[in-house]
Length: 159
Image (spheres, rainbow, N blue to C red):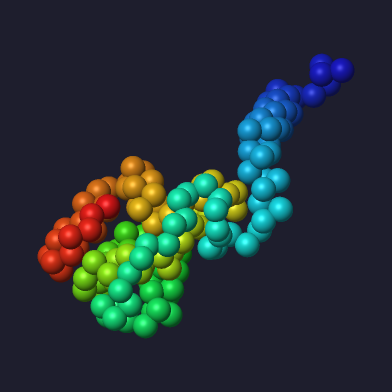
């Protein structure tokens, strides 16, 4: 049967076969994450889905910005790490705007626990400190730069 097929056609068929096997293996290993994605496709902020999601007590009178601004900051950080890789410059811009420990604590509260995706597949649900550590392990020392900004702003918290 394969005698009548040229070598290039045999190679093409073999490559398609290997491709199908690789896809099936990926589906097998990612099936739990794919199922979870279709059960909860919202992505963004979630409560109690892996990362610690405890609200940090703060004195709201010490906040530099209104609470909605911290949500915007948190969204910027989430977008900087989600789908397209790590945009540490956007993250550093957010942390440059933090003026005191209370600002950082409110940023952590606003971030909550969020699901990160790679190629539309949910990979982890993490809070802000966990997200920074995870992204730092995959790229240059972004957390070190965040901590340097915090130190320069006389903020005692570190990631």
